Image (cartoon, rainbow, N blue to C red; front, side, top):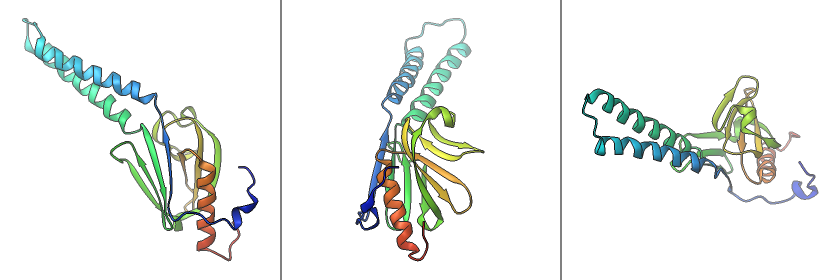
Amino acid sequence: MRDHPHEETARHPDEWHGRATNRFQWLLALGGAACMALGIELAVVSAWTSSIAPLAMAVVGCIAAGMLVLFGTLAFVHVDLKLDKDFLEVRCGHIGVPRRRIPLSHVAGADFEPHVTPRHWGGWGYRWRPEKGTAVVVRRGEGVVLRLWDGHTFTITVDDAESAVRVIRARLRQDTPDATR
């Protein structure tokens, strides 16, 4: 993280908002919608005369796979990070689910990570790795790594992660004025 000599005295906003978006996942969502459309077309226009069972399996399979891909990718098209004076809240996708709300009293520290990649976490989405902790990864790039008091870490990919780390550190200093962090 770059040095910011004014960070000790700078006033931070009451609420900080950050966001990260992955435009590539829209292509995957489009593939899921195409698979659903194929299932619907099979159901409506099919001329299968031998048996209904293969047709039903094809229709249900296409629609189920399409819905899984469509909603699974739309859930992680973007991530929103909201930081107020007491909580840090992470919401994914357009629906806002999955969501995680972390009280700042549970945060021991925050670090800037310039290179968070889906490859390090096993893909996009809400991820858990025993040796690394938990993460919400929607794209490669900078992120915030929270160190929690229970020993776990939580990583979030977000634009302007340095600013988020400065605000989190300032809030943590406000909560414990005697401690040096």
